[in-house]
Image (cartoon, rainbow, N blue to C red; front, top):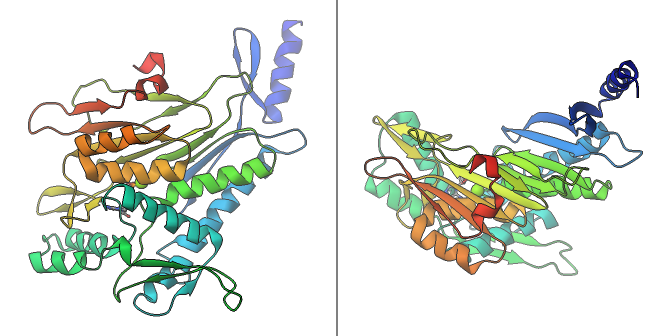
Length: 350
Ligand code: AMP
Ligand code: MG
């Protein structure tokens, strides 16, 4: 092809939004990319649409799924199903959609699996520590004990539908209990977006709900999706940066992005339900898993469990790998990886 015609073709394809790049002289398709602010975070969708569907229409479907999940699950919206369950704690069960039932059942599964390190009823403790941040004053022992007494995933009842009650309903056993899906909801939303894309015939996409992502298929040339993982301030240490993923999810929980500062000290936004206090040593936890809901819940659970118990749990699970960056009393943080994690790190970033 004459050079001028080749450049013209690139310009035309760029105008159509399907091409932007060239590797070894061969044009390489680029995905349609769009970012929106949803659920209080940045959500990015990259998609290769199937024939006859525009990238924008496919991405719209993914964003619509995330908006639906947010409507059902947000604790900022008083009219969300999750807020209604919390408002009715200790009282009548609240009818819920299959999606809300599924995320709460999955959350309870990870609570059991992690010995209560992950607890979707953590909200009273989260609120206590948030208020402590605003007041710049550590909470009292009594206040911690009072909030802790309201955190117990075993008090969640899921009642199955009957002929007179044609939907599942959920009840929290004690008045004052509250649900908080912050540790699992973004991953669940990413999975919902991927389900919507699959339904639209998409075979290749990346959905990133802040640090919770799913890579569907691979690029059309067969290469995997490359996902950058944020590493905390590593004091000069070189840490793995990029993972190669195909049909896998990755989640990162870290205390370097979201924390509260009280009396001159930083506290993590992740709370250990057993002590009622923020976790201290885990700078970041990255989990690779077959779906984003599980990766999200596990990254939060491992942040509470710490490196020894956390890696023990990872070894028990199939198709789950993890990397933890653990602060030390002095010197640089240590990096702990499960055996199979290395396989996901791109050679250039090892
Ligand atoms: P992530 O960034 O996914 O680790 O989620 C952190 C969020 O999970 C926090 O901001 C809280 O909303 C929530 N959370 C904190 N501690 C826990 C816990 N022990 N179990 C479940 N969710 C938690
Ligand atoms: Mg999480």
